[in-house]
Length: 209
View 1 (cartoon, rainbow, N blue to C red):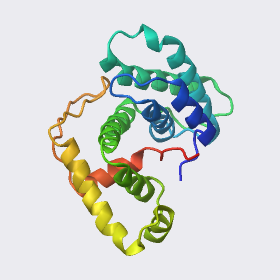
View 2 (cartoon, helix red, strand yellow):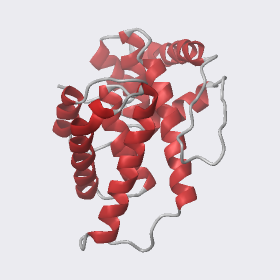
View 3 (cartoon, rainbow, N blue to C red):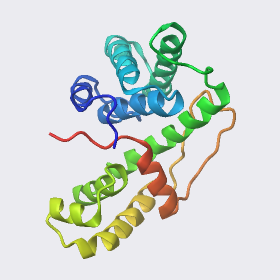
View 4 (cartoon, rainbow, N blue to C red):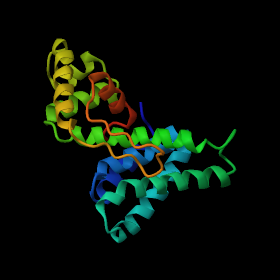
């Protein structure tokens, strides 16, 4: 279960950072958190510091960006720089060796693709958004998901399959934009259910009340 940054921080950021371009307000907090914890393997405490730093800079400078298409790569670069600054300067960070640039690029590229899938998920009905978020992001059982949504647990599997099919249809034909740090640009126009599930699991779940 994702715990970094804190749920209160995620909710505060989601209200403070306006949506522009391909990075929604809710996607912002998940993207920054995932880069810090997955690409740079920071602890919960250190990832929280990175998140607050990037959130502050984004809030102050977002209006200066002229192109909406530049938002996502810009936030990614801010997060990368903040993580590196913390790793190189903080005495409390135990670092065996600085992550290799290629490995970091690969993780960020996958997270970028996961954001695209999340954007597609936002285009589905609330019913599908909830069941996919609970199953893949919150790792809830069929029984728990059924109880929370008020539907029979025996119908969850078929509902997940149907919703993944809708998500695949929503995404097909879209271009997956690789971040500027990527050495290769791969256009993926088709997804299978297994791949969609993997990408949905990469980002933290949506904050709850």
